[in-house]
Structures are given as structure tokens and as C-alpha cells.
Amino acid sequence: MSSAFQSAEFKQLLAKYESMLSNKKNVYFEADELKLIAEYYASIGSTGASDEAISYALNLHPDNLDILIFKCHSLIINDKIEDAQLLIDSLPDQQDYEVRLLQAEICLAESRFADAKQILKELYLESRDIDTMLDIAQLYLDNHDMKSAKEWIDKAYKQEPNSSEVLNMKALLCFSNGELSKAAKLYNRLLDDFPYSIEYWQNLVKCYLYTNKLEKAQDALEFAMSIDDENLINWELKGNYYLLQNDLEEALSCFKYAEQHAKEKSYIKMILLKVYFLMQNHIEVVEYASILIDEYKLQDYEMADVYHMRAFAYLALKQDKDAMKDVISGLSYNNHYSLLYVVKGEIHLYNLETSLGIEAFKYAEKYADDVIDILRLIAMACLRTNYMEEALSYFQQYGEKATGEEKYANYYFIALCYYWLNEEHEMFVNLVKAAIYSPSTLFQERMMLPKSLHDEKFHQICLFILDQLKSGEIDPYLYM
Image 1 (tube, rainbow, N blue to C red):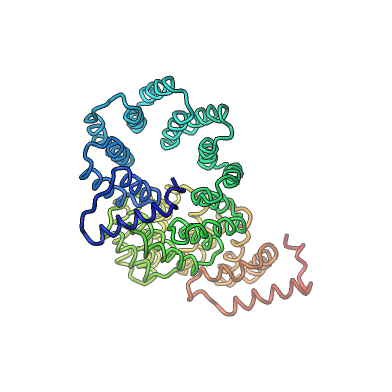
Image 2: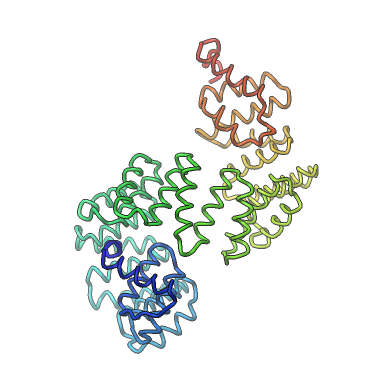
């Protein structure tokens, strides 16, 4: 649909509809016009605006089958299965293709896979065309059944290997399976024929961002922006590009633009919250987290994460009682969320409750999806609270499991712990290793520390070791 959304006719239609909303005065639209508007809002993630357009369409055209089907699909997506089933049962033509497709969608949502398979088999046998194959494949993709989706996509590809619809679905499958290089090739092939498809450009950008091919991502982004420099997905992708470049200020600017123009704010506010969290802007973290908690209905896992970030910010602002309240609130939404236990442990250490802190860290490790990452976060918590021996122990455990750049950066923190413990030889050895394998970490990692740990003497030692390595005074082979 992306090409339809770029047309001058659609932009005029959308402007007319949004003018109606702002003036609060009803205007007549055809059913297919309102359905297209609803599809547009759904495509940019504005589900509330999409539902509003469909509700208005039903006021004008209460018996229109396409509108009713769209509403039913929306109900299924929002897990309102009973409401969707009641709506389907009320439709006059139960043998309509789209109605039966919706019945199959409900079966998949309710894990009645055999029933869904039978309905879809009957639909295919009645037509055996490409559109039916791709509709079936899309249902399985939406239900995260990649194996079944692949069977139907392969069948369609065998029949029409040059069909753009088939190639697009094949690209979506590759993307969903993590085969990003294959997906990128397919999107490039599609763009040869459809160079003004913003959707294909955006999906290509995602492929390049996920594979860290930032120059190619930048080029693809420029094409997408040239097609529509007001498209909010473009601005979100641009923000993610800058995040990967570690340019948080530029990323923030992109997400702020999206926030200003988005009809539904919760999604983009969540992104901004995470950017401010990365920037350690604790006041903004508290502000955005409070807005999300007080004004929006979030999923339980989202609430737990928001409370975790606000608790961390409160603690950094030395408001430990408010931080602990947020930890308790967050755990009420997800009592297995390891990041909350990390903050809980740090609060206990902040209050010199060592045994309670260590106990909380054990729960953090127990519930961690990635125990390696949690070990590093625990080590940082110990470092911030000046528990240097404990920090050293956790950094060493992390170093035993980490690989590559993460392991090299860890040498810096181990050296820092030894510095504060007055063990000069071990400090020197680990700083040399950090300088050999990843010299930039001697300065980049410093930014992750609270200012209380920005020790100028230690910083000068880092510079001295780098100079000694460059001049040949230190033999790097002795430390490799």
C-alpha cells in the first residue's frame, strides 16, 4: 500500500480527513476512502487513529463488508477474540473469502491449528491462485509459524518467481528468520522495479541496521527521506541509525521530531525514555517514565521496564526511597525481571545493606535472559556504590564469559577496581591489555562512570600507558 499512500490524491484525502477531525465537523467519505485512511494509520503504527477511522466509516456505512472485515481483523490483532467472533458471526455471507480467512485467523489465535489448516486448505483448493497462497502465508507469518509460511511462499515462488508480491513475501520471511543478507538482496531486486516504494526502502534500511552496515543504511535512508521527509518511520529509522553511531544527541533530535508529529505518543515516548536512559539524563528519565506510568495503558512487561528505568534514575538522584518504591511496583508487574533486582541490589548497597544487596543480585542472575550482560550490570552497580572487591569479582566473572570487544573493555574496569584497591601491578597489567586490544575503551568507558569515579590520576595513568606502547617502552607481546 505504500505507493498508494505517496500519491497526491491520497495526501489530499488524508488532509481532508484530518481537517475534519481538527474542526470537529462531520464530512462525508466513501467507505473505500476511509478504509484506505485506516490502512495508512495502521501502517505507521497509529492503531488508535486507525480504529477511529474505521468507527467513523461504520457510522456512515454500517453494512459495508470491507469495513466490517477490517474492524474484525483489528479486534483479533488486539486480542479481542470473542468480540471478533461475534462480529464474524453477524456477517451475512459466511462463505465470503475474507470472512473465512478471518475464521482461520481466529483459529490460529486460539491455537486451533488443525481447524485453521482445514479452512485454508479449502480456500486454496477453490482458487489455487497466487493471492490465496500469499494470504495464507501472511496468516502464518503473523502467527510466527515460519515453517508453514515458508511452505506457502515456496509454492507461490515456484509458480511465479518474478512476481513482486511473491518476492516481497519471500523478503519478509527472510527478515523474520534473521536471514538479513538474503532479505536485503530481495529488497534491492524489488527496488529495481519499484524505486519509489518507501516501504521497500525502509525494510532495506532495517536489514542494513541490524547487520551494522551503517554506510549502506545511510544511503538507503537518504532515498527513503527523499520520497517522504515527513514519514515518521523514516525519522525513527534515522534515530536508530544515530544510536548505532553512538550519536545520542542526533538520535534524540530524530525521535523528538517523531514525538512532535505522532498521533499516538506512547510508543515514541518509550523510545525517548530509553534514549534519555542511555544518556544518563536522570531528570528526563523520571519525567518521561512518570508520563508513561500515569497517562498510558502499557503491557505488564513494559510497565516493569519503565519502573526499572525510573528506579535507576531516582537512585542516581539519591532518592533511594522513591527508587525502592518503584522496584516494588515494577516487580508487581513482573517479579522475574532481572533488571529490577539489579537496581534493588544497588539500593541495598547504597544503604550499606551488603547481604541484602548480594541476595538481590543472585535473583538478578537467576532470572536473567543473558547472564553475561547481567554480570556486567551488577559489577557496575557495585562500582557506583564503592564496593570495589565485589565489583572486581563480578567484572572477573563477566570477563571469563565475555568475548571480543566486550572482553577488551572489561580490562579497563578491572584495572579501575585494582586502582581503588591499591593493587598497582594488577592495575598496570589490565590497563596495558585494554590499551593493546582496544585503546578507545580507555576513554569511552570513562563516560559510563559517575563523576565521583572520574579520577584524574587514573586517567593520566591511561595516557601514560598509551604513550609507552606507542614509543616501544612497553612490549605488548608480554601482555598478549
